[in-house]
Length: 342
Image (cartoon, rainbow, N blue to C red; front, side):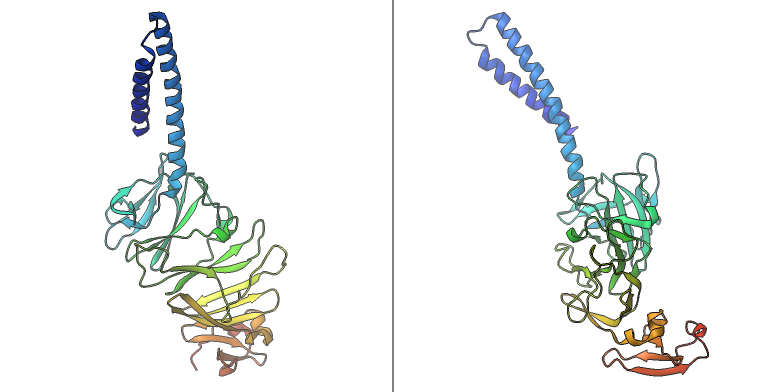
């Protein structure tokens, strides 16, 4: 509507200018011809302008920056499917959710894309918006597109307690894929698997970290993301196209984690929150334990446990690498079912 009004206004203004400019000293026939020609040109130009305006408006839809949703205090989100276009609904009120940007928290705006994926993880939702209302994710893999293109799908994290919406775009991850089934959430962060293009093995582990003092007016100040790191500031495992290695398994519980890769390395450790995101403490002590390499490792909120060659369950001291005896079992099959209480 706005583009049509602007087009009409420009057309009348230019017609008036041309008529005024050419009317003096011209014959009636010449004047009629010039006016007709001018109107034709301006109408065509107006139509072209309207089309360009709509195209730019559609392309700029990607830049509808979302920072907040408006729903009930204890909202329960769901996707309402529709042939005209899916939309996000709060089950508690059965009303469509409103979206806001921190640039204008007083006025909501209508999205030009559609919610096509929604999953709940404890205190958060993972939401994907797409311009394809019937978008499906083959093998539950989300392709991270070039976010400068309006057609790219977008993945957001929504915090339940506040309604804050976190934009997870990362320039360095363009063309990579997120395994939507791999999210592991702790009170500190989301961890998930990343695949390189055209590969089926886990390339590396990535995380999003949202701090408690998040401030909506500065959305990137207290939101951090990176590849899983070691205590020395190096990537624990970072697979490249020239590197044939991959991650065999990764597990995180509370503040503890372990990672096994195809180089027969077992990384284990913990992490904590500081003012710049997450700090990691890790080691490779379990790489010398054959059963640990096979995956006989358990994590609880008390620490990391493993099975040694003598079928003893031990608790790993992360700082010293020593194993503290917990109990002996009769076979490997008992490891995952035996109580870890000492």
